[in-house]
Length: 282
Ligand code: ATR
Image 1 (cartoon, rainbow, N blue to C red):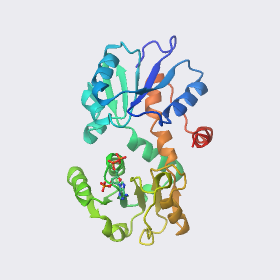
Image 2: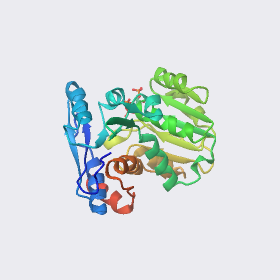
Image 3: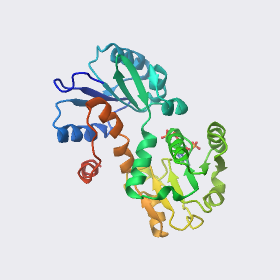
Image 4: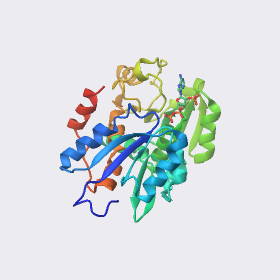
């Protein structure tokens, strides 16, 4: 973190390739303005072959950044190149938030935090269930499995088109996590109090399969990490079948909170004004 942030502006980034579509600058720009800070948060397009150089200029102080966010395809490299990755990022092998502290590059992964903070805000009490179903077995799924497990949910059922990827996660996370092929979705869903879509099914007009949510427990919550459109085809089906839903926009907003606090020294708020700013950009 910048030692003299009260007297000089701090600068942070979001690095990816491509990076044009990242909405993170809108989020951090809003918070900087709200806090009356003169800092900046900018997109950095860095190709994979240039990423190690980008990190080395960050560590040396040459780039002038206090830290930043990391997105596709650099999350694994960010974890590997950090001096002080925390336990969360180490378990995932991927980091999305970096910051300098006493000359060392620290790394964490805030996707799980964002997921939980969104659910806590929109569906308090969701974690009274002892069973969750997670559709998908990619990077986002991993962070969400970790978060749900750490909240004490006893059984986590991962359902994926490629069953071997779900099995890899079950092997990695241990006995609480069970793997299923897509055909077993109905069985996996039985009695669960939380259903999470972590795949791109239904994103941006892409089709989503018909899902029968009726095996879920009464009062179950259905959530989707896709937020374009805000009410995804999966959420629409859950609403039509009488279940409570939580959209994925809040996860995007909440996952940004820890980074802003590290770089700029102020804990920002996720509020309706911020949601409206992102929605206006969609
Ligand atoms: P991310 O890091 O964003 O989670 P990813 O690692 O590419 O992205 O994972 C995408 C997930 O969406 C995977 O679970 C993928 O299923 P496979 O492992 O079988 O590829 C899932 N997915 C993407 N498109 C899908 C589709 N059309 N039908 C079913 N699952 C799909």
